[in-house]
Image (cartoon, rainbow, N blue to C red; front, side):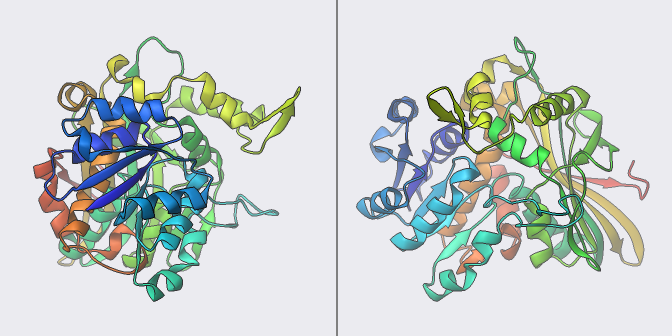
Length: 406
């Protein structure tokens, strides 16, 4: 398989590191607006000749299309901020190749009632073009990271094997990661973090469809496995809520993060000061987006690995019925930062995210997964994915829980 990797930040680097020795990979073009960064990643790979470097501007659809055609790629892998998804998605379509991302096109809150009614939802731009992709026989594989991605595969697996009826699919994400030396240092893109946490979260219910709720609503305590422990989780906007109901029969879908009071307080301050704005404003003689300023002031998550300690957990809490009895199961994956740094030289959050698209690449390269149109992870048989997880040093767990959630 030949791949154009657009974006060689933390997750892009991890994708290249994980994929580098896989026999199904022929070429992975490392494309970034920062060529020096792409060369830095290329230099640490064991087969640099399989990872040519190119400069790309993710805002330039024609440039992305030209690169895809130049290298004759089979897949355009989007590993940049979701702000650029539309251009990259359209470029893959124009180039006539498959597309994959880890976060869907952005939402726009409802203009009159944003805390109750959906406006433009995550992925609406992409799903509106489903028929066009089908007509060309091309696959746009959206939301294939860890959350969304692996969490969605877990939901489909639970439906197939563990439940006769699903009442609720609840994605729950928590960590006890500490970044030493900084008072505030997100372990993932702050740009994406602001987008997810400050937009009105979406909930899906069978009898109501998609609707919104205030940010950080419906707090609950969830006990995460492998020593992470109990954390308060709150509603956050996330793709699983838009993906799971399209393919998995269930009564309700939610997504909640264990953010912590301090983190939420900082995000609320950013919102209060208008620093979450992604539209450019004039400052003296220049125009700059406040959110980009916030991102520029914070440390790069790709280079925080040696300062991070602890574990991160991503998983899917499924409630329903099996053989006439209530059942609750939490399917999860835990990544330890010290282990990830020692084995792969990348921090836990980006590694945990990056393994999933690489597994999906293998399943597409071997023809195990195939399809046309705009599809999420739930559209595919989950069994081959879970079977490959151990081969990628990516173990998962399944925890039986009592109906009370303990």
